Image (tube, rainbow, N blue to C red; front, side, top):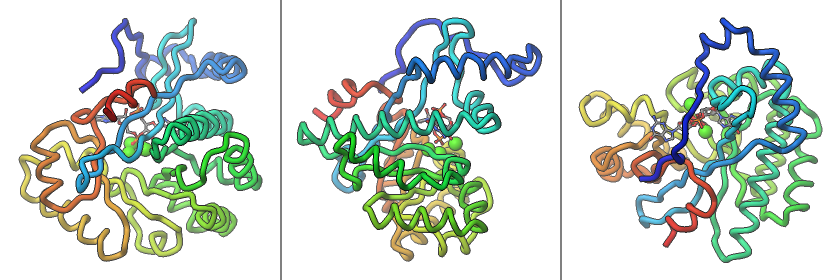
Length: 275
Ligand code: C2E
Ligand code: CA
Ligand code: CA
Ligand code: CA
């Protein structure tokens, strides 16, 4: 288990931000950071339980600003969504993820790289073209790119045919869509039927009580069975203990991700973990 490096973390809480009304400051600094490509990306491995191999990673944005310190995604992403800068973060993450997947591919490592997408990015009618261009420019095989969407995204996309169309075009290219934070929001069979989703990620809130609550165990067994029935892979996120991983393996869960395997780390550390 690796930590995300030492150092002092100046972490601003949501309340701090309100009190200081630093939203405008964050927006201003974020524009500069995007311009100077000062954002960083860390990758968290995903472990296939059947093979015991790391088959993919999820990319997370990391930002430490020289003026305001570390801004964590739970603060950064909502502000970026409000201001529209999420599209620029999305573009940056897409490029970085594809570059990284292509670099590993060249080394003979076929790791799928997942990025997180906001619905706002898919309201851009050029999204499909943009993704195709980045894949081409970086020499990244389309089937190594995965896009994680939340239930909130799915619910909104359900009513917007242009988003569904874009997702289907990308799916035809080989890109895999993943339903993130499953079970926390508005799970709807309608969007599960409408959207081209290949994988479900069981939210970490369920995993945290898994070892102690029989009811949660039954629930997760049910979700895994449900996934199998409709031909979707099921990954559990937020796996922090060996006990949780064992239970999930016993339930036939396809893959796990979480601190028990590794924190989000640099590409070089991912390569070390593969050995
Ligand atoms: P998420 O996509 O559900 O990501 C999982 C979060 O849990 C990440 O936090 C990850 O670092 C953390 N995590 C991983 N393993 C464990 C574990 O075993 N235990 C616990 N307690 N936590 C674990 P992070 O990186 O702070 O991101 C928070 C959220 O911000 C993400 O939730 C995602 O919705 C969003 N986010 C992060 N990076 C991006 C990005 O590049 N673009 C977009 N649109 N959203 C992002
Ligand atoms: Ca995610
Ligand atoms: Ca998640
Ligand atoms: Ca989450």
